[in-house]
Structures are given as C-alpha cells and as structure tokens.
Amino acid sequence: MNHDAADMEGPSKSARKRAAEEAQRLGERLIALEEGELEALGLPERLRDAVREARHIGSRAAGARQRQYIGRLMRDVDTEALAAALAARSRGAALEAGRFRLIERWRDRLIAEGEPALAALAALEPRASEPPWQTLVARARDPAAADAARRTAGRELFRALRALLGSDAPAD
Image (tube, rainbow, N blue to C red; front, side, top):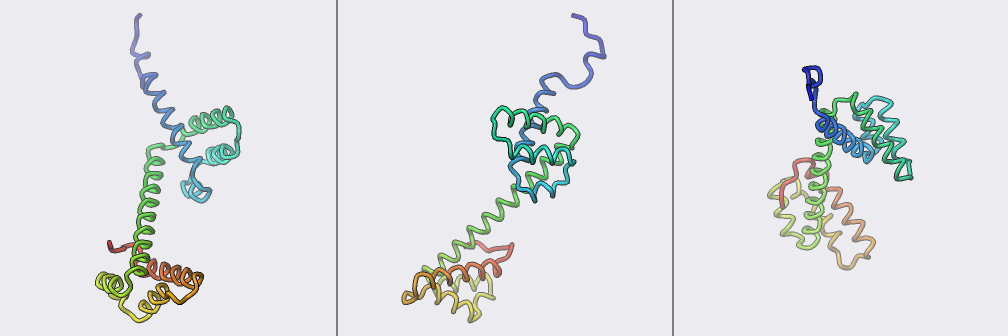
C-alpha cells in the first residue's frame, strides 16, 4: 500500500479516538457538576444546554448518545483549560472538606477534654483564650443541660471555630 504525505498528516486514528474518549469523560464530569459550577466555567451555550439535557435523560442508550454528543461539542472547547479548571475545583473541594473535618475534630476535642483542649487551641490561636470561648465550651459540655441544648451549643461552638480558624486552620 502506497501512502503519500497527505495521508500521513495529522494524528492517527487511535490518537483521535483517545482524544474523543477523553473529551467524553470530561463531558461526564461536566454533567456531574452543580448548576452554579457549570455556569462559572463559561462554556459555550450549546454545550451548557447539552449538559443540562443529559442530566434529565433516564434511558441508558439515550444518555450514551447525549454523552457522545457532548464529547463532539467539546471539540470546539479548550479541553486542557477546562480539565485544569475542573481539577482546581476538585482540589478546592478537597481542601474545604479537610478544613471541615479539622474543625469537627477541634469541636469534639473541646467537648471531650474541656479546659486542656481550650488551652491547646489558645496556644495556636490566641483569640481562643477570650472568655466567650470558655462559656461556649462549658455550655457544650454541661451534663445537666438537655440533649437539645448541648447539641445547639455544639453547633454554636462549631460556627465559632469555623470563624476563628478561617482558611488557615492549625492542625490539632
């Protein structure tokens, strides 16, 4: 078989197929996004509409066709930039989840240990040594209080910790 230079230009069929499959996987990640996150990406209107429509398709075969269509529309989009934006969102969500778990651990430790844990927190964050913190911890630990009152105090303590620790939460 004789191949001339015109036949050899561009990516191979396998490379094109890999790129199409990657675009389709990226499209599936778009389908999983919430509406606000989808809007924030600034996608072309046809692609956004196709993603929204894919969310409402119940049939497996129709969903597969819609995902292929989304993959086809992704050819007109900078997929590398889109993949980077989605990865950044994933990292941000993971950091936020880690921060949330850290705040929960501090709340649980303050309720379980009381003053020693508050002293440890105050060593990391001096604002935690102020009197309102002692009151919050005491209310959350009060054995004489009703369960509902302790739960409410625990939620208040969590909110106060979230405000205190902010985005640069210290380790426990």
